[in-house]
Image (cartoon, rainbow, N blue to C red; front, side, top):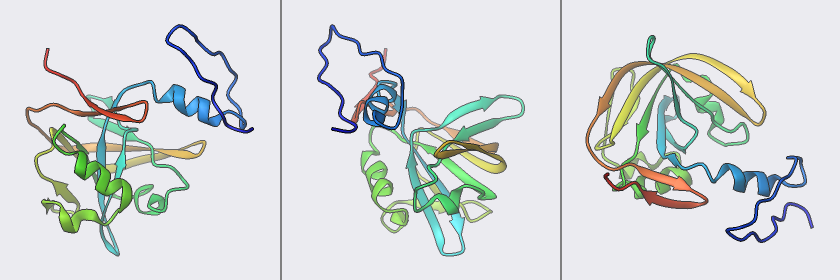
Length: 175
């Protein structure tokens, strides 16, 4: 049977060469890396749109650059791959509902408190961090592209991040 991962216990490890027959196993291995959760937003000719993503990373402090990677097969890909302006919202542990809303529906802004920046990009309120960006470059990367943005404005606040690992949501407790 294709794409089935065998049962593993806490004491076993499975070595494999990634290929088209074991993408589920590779996805499970990637999922072991805990990530924060973001919503990326932009303005389109059809209105404002958002997308849940965990493929966000800082890239450079000077100049201030970030990157993220939308999937080519996503129905929202065309809106984000070359958007001139976009915002990245790092969600708090209190914003799981926002994460799930944008995972299901790119046009979920009707139900979510937000404002607009001067470029018309929607800005979600109460995130623990937010980065308003201008598009710098897009690079092909397999079934995704890497989008690099220049951070023009940033916001940070206290709070616990919403994290995702192995298909589950979690919270990092304060140390």
